[in-house]
Length: 180
Image 1: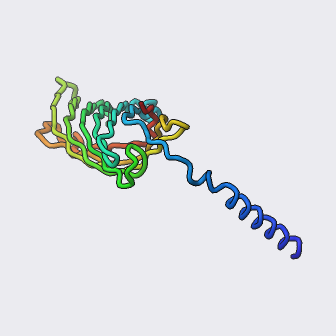
Image 2 (image 1 turned 90 degrees about the horizontal axis):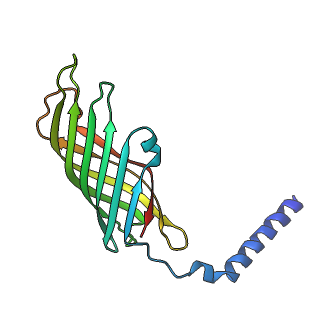
Image 3 (image 1 turned 135 degrees about the horizontal axis):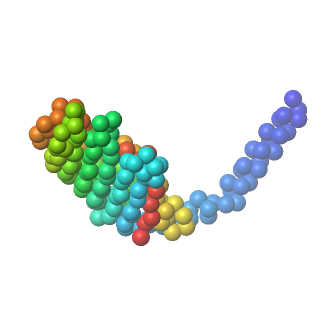
């Protein structure tokens, strides 16, 4: 029991000393992240869910950007090619790092295969959606980006094939990117 108390007291003393000696480490100058980030999701890319995103800071708390993706979501080879613009709000004023939420607007080209096989049908639909997530800008110059998030888009327009999805997820499982 006495040995446990000594170990605890030594740990407590060491913690107090480290925190009192190194106050400069806690007040280091903050490096502003780069204004632009280009990123992709290499994990989803492996599963043929391709995406590429460009984000530009317009103020310390907001960004705008462009996103493109291509995915095959069904067993019958229906494909979705999406191109959207987005706006993200960062309430902590450190864009493009930290918690964000926002909206997106764009178009989705839906290419459906019919069963039995016939002529492919292609339709371009309007997409409106939302996103929520968190991004980190790491490194000494904060130029390496890691972000996660989720959202979705709703498709508006006429779809001939009733099996075609009218909502699509926007997944930022682990987007990796470079800031410049």
